Length: 564
Image (tube, rainbow, N blue to C red):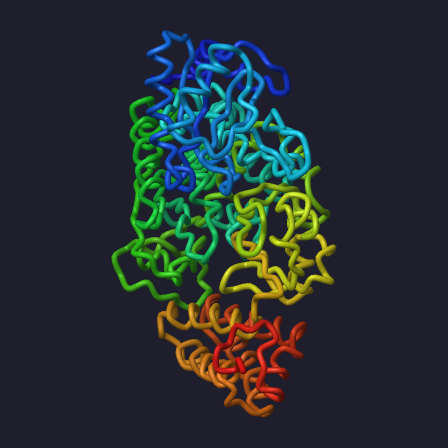
């Protein structure tokens, strides 16, 4: 039971030697700890079997070595991942059959297993995780604990300064001072819109109605996006602590996490985290000896993409059909059950303890003038290093694709990067040096969204890609408003004619006009942003559309009716 900040510090001191070894990177020592990634990607590659094999082999050898499972390390392509401490020796593609050799050679003999280390073609193997190119240009602050702590052990989170920000807030800050710190930090919502978090909190704080609610939006529905899932699987207590601080700031005593039911591992680890926090006295009444009461419950979403929109999410959470409603009033004034409600996404909330612990100046010193801090992206598609990354705002797309992502496979030519999921657009290869921040992406006709980056090369047809995302948006539309319900399907019909060789040039003009109409007249963000992919590809890849229409030819060789 944590009754005070002193109890938190006692746990930190007790576990300090264990955790200090995990922070000693770049120098070999006698192996004492083995960390195994058990994020969904590594689990699907067999990391649970590797974990079990390591425990058996270490027990058989009578070694004083601890085996710990962690969340996602980020380098999904290389899983299952195993890291040995002290030093941080990084092993990739470890199988259960390789475990006896790894234990005998490294844990017993002290010699790293060379052929299990990361190696680039024609270069020497890389021994330590920090020197792997995939990690070298990242700045992992939100993801600092993911891959480093056991997400199912609250004490490990506490030992990494977990709940220290909450303790400081309850002891030293008024609610208004907390909001001021968050506002000065420049933190903007990481769910897509980029609204200033402190400003949203101030609206809810000023609202006179009670009770007030904090809702975590964990309904991550973009194809290819798994940022929030990785945080929930790897560091769930960071999200709980962020919700607690938000509750104190706005005067709420109840929090809900709206999480996708399709994320069973994230749901299970959240359930464990909430249960542990209650048992430890960090949720419930008189938290850390204060007069602050706050508790959290989970609400499982049914997988509707439109429920990522905040008003649709709230209706779904209350057991109603997940349909958006007009705004104002905004949820900060009238949300859950008509009461003031703060809705922040997972990554936004995970930033809060860091800001309160390290100071708003530290956070504001990262990123660009108007886009502060770091951003987590999932990178997938036609790229060598698929996975999850965290970089400062303002990092160029070229750095992400080539320096971190390792470029396009098989020496093929990069064509574009699709950002923001179904709500985003496509950035052509010749604009890769533009910094990634809210304003720069908006100028290019796309959005940051929650952080999905899909890399496209010369084997991708931009018309076909546009049809894919628009079809997804049409299928996920709630159907409440005519522009979205009808307009998106009319656009898909035009794209079908283009990709099947039945279109005329007037179809292209109609497609563009429809895209503008749907964007300007739809009720919610789904319909308002779905045309982005159409307008951006028409802006940068109109020649591909014309090749389909005039020449009855698909330059990428994807559209089968146009193959001769």
